[in-house]
Image 1 (cartoon, rainbow, N blue to C red):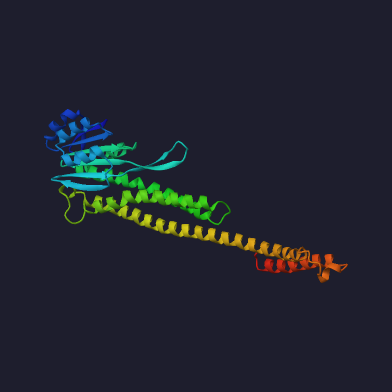
Image 2 (cartoon, rainbow, N blue to C red):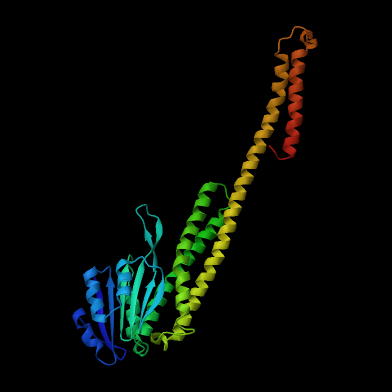
Length: 326
């Protein structure tokens, strides 16, 4: 569906226009057209593609979706794929990280965004751009930067949430409870972190080409802005690597704690087994029913056998307790 179709002239909003009027406004000097669409039907996208004269390969990628983050050049235009993220509550009430897709077509005097699988739009970006006409005069290059910056800024709250979950998991690491549950929580954090990394790393490489080396013509007046976005992505990527290392250490510590707990259980079982073995051995000898056994005729043989069992077990119990096996 069509969200917005607005024409701007010299940095200021001119009018909301119909899709069929786009080509007319593109011919006007100093005019810039910004169109936003969400989950468009193929025929809707085809109409806009004809108005902007978009490259067929880029249109095909936008129609199919499920592209990795990238920025590609097609003549004097750019095609970018971004992965915005947001927390969404599932049917069980648990929040999950949902990754959407935004396809962006950028030309000298137009910009088209096509959103897939995300409910968060760019109304805040449009409002900011309209409040700052001196920046909007840069045209599509500045709006392109503002959209990328908005998507990147959405990564920071996700990163903060993952750091908080990791800190909570570390605090509970040495508490009593299910080690299996703690490891499942750590693996859940790691899985979410890798989802975020898959959105950040390719985009970081792509944005790096917009301010250094052979910069596309559309971005030549906004290089410092894209450098700022690259710095944000570098910070996020560094934080992701740090959290990954902490997660690896936390998982290893949990596995070590499980091993220590199993060893403690084994030692206790061995200790109690030793205490049970001695009386069983003595009782087993006297239970063989041999006729000629020297102790069978003793008047105090039974109490003496019991006393020996208790004495041996008492010595064993004392030594095992001192060794912390019991």
